[in-house]
Length: 225
Length: 315
Image 1 (cartoon, each protein chain N blue to C red):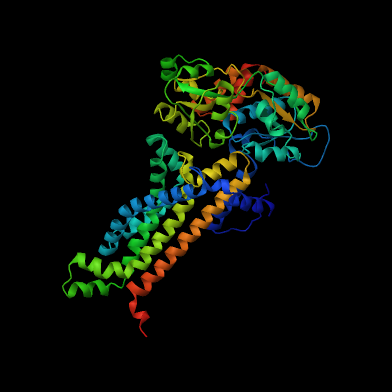
Image 2: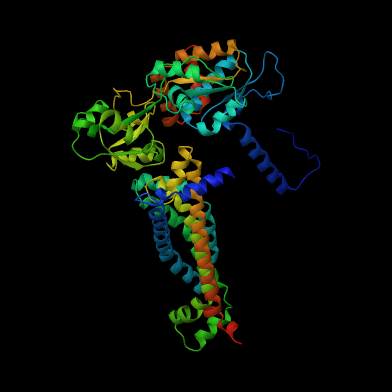
């Protein structure tokens, strides 16, 4: 409990909130890495997931790939990419992209595949093109599940983005590494608490997005009086 | 480890699960690589002459090799030994030693002294050892220090050293381009980092944290010229393997860091004499050579230690 109080004192110290290595800067850097990672990962995973869900083909293979990819240890991958790309941000971002893809992919294909098969068939029967079926029927209905995938990917990435500090001086991970090595445990716990708070905030935001998507986009009929 | 309590046939799946549990239990107690040579005597409460000596090591391959030479030399001399290797960093294992759970641990004189005496002024080998002897407490003692050393050094690429004519740290003054140091993030606040370099040598450098302790990522950053100098241990075989150069520390910026075994009361004089012989025989070159065999040939610590003891006629 004492350590916890010290961590809070560390967080309350005004000098830790200023400068290029201060908490606000590092929180922003941390969010920046998370956002960049998610944008890259989504650009790869969502089109692939939607395609698989729409065609209802290859979901077994996707399941195997995402399951396997989830087992890759991110720190090991980071070292591997680091040896290839050198120090800096590219290696950790690439490793985090690999971490984020399975959840995003699973959300996209499972969301679309789980729509009652008669619905896209009906849409096709009234003359919609495949692109229209995806855009106007499947994506809106699958949106809550797709956001669910984004939610779990964000959770993983924001918590693991501490590893960015392994090869570059970026993000909240620096407090963890520096605190661990110098036995400055209040700093380490303070940094960890910041990551937890950040994660919870993002989680709350995305949870309400998911609820919104369910009530307004996928099932607006539930709002009828 | 307890025996398997099942006698009646059990379905294959539960057998597999059980095997997993047993394997996990094995991982917790000892290193599978050295299982074959470990004396199986449990560390009972008995205190008769042949009490088991529990030997620990850092989670650092070079330290494990040294611990293994101690273990094998003691076994050869008829002592009972239990290996508890790869126990993380000093912050984790020293409390265990102080609590009497580990009896023998290969340590490094300077960093160990700094653990107990945070603001020590001693830098040179003999001063450090003398102060360390006085500062060791809680019924522990340090045995003789070995000529073998494994200390921090500023390392640059051969090209960089040739270009600016660098052999000592003082020569950094000749460099007219901005330089960046790479190392674990704690280096930024520790005396071996940029602050110490400026205070002792008057040389200003920037800092980039790379958290792999002078490992492959640090070497890659040096070669890519992302950093110009890095903190790497002198006993690291990657220095020679990658054409890197360690600069001489003429003003005692770095703490001397000789291999020195830390022992509990459980290590009697006979056992201490065995360890002291091993320490005396180990040269800095021996240590680099053994580390190199671990890195390049990927041999287990037990094999490397056995070969070295045989070479020195201690095994």
